[in-house]
Length: 342
View 1: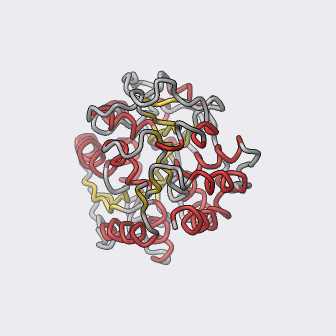
View 2: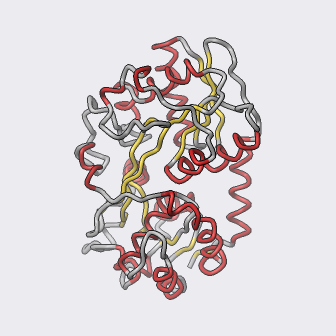
């Protein structure tokens, strides 16, 4: 079984975090600064969103590559002098940032594409730019009969080819919560799944950091994992034998949102950036290879590689209340690292 120590995970996280150490400024009238997730998101937004913003509004954008928790920490540490104008956040960090008062209110009338976004996806302090769908990915050549639900991951023949990862990511957190539910737990009680994880860890093919899972799957070291449709589409585009299934209790969805930092220097241009990011042109481009992001603009016709036929499906998927998850998540991460990763 491939095994990764906490030390190696922390070392990798530290190396990735170095990308966000150099501040970038964009205080000119025709510019804006935005935090962006390192990796695929940064590549996508540099290649697609930046040119669209320049073309539509003659605004230049500087990106600051930072993971969500690092974005929130950086703004809090800046003490009222925003290091960038816009956040991009998943629901957990977004809830924490809102509770800390780090957002400007959103005025939807300043977004020309607001009417093209489904109801509920533009909130008082954020605008959804991407939807993620989470479930189970497996190798159909290794498992002619796919698993039906979360509990199956802990049973033969699946557990022996399973890749385990913890609560560091949104997709990992919500997946493990749903596993806990099928064993009698809840959004706030993951004790039942820890009992199952302790039994499964010696049998599982790998325990690794979230970023390592796609590579392990591609290399054939694991054949089943919990992940999002974005990762599945990327691997499938590389020729990997992989399929996505929605667990019998339902696929999970969560949204990634753009926010304007409280006290931002370039609020007007921040609105132009957000407007460009949710435009049909940009959303249509971002859903294709190699980015595979689920669009939220109603004018976009979805491609057939995203394992979702319509944006309307999102309203029927499983969602979570991060105001109840956040207070416990740090303890869950620490416990997973001590008891499962080791």
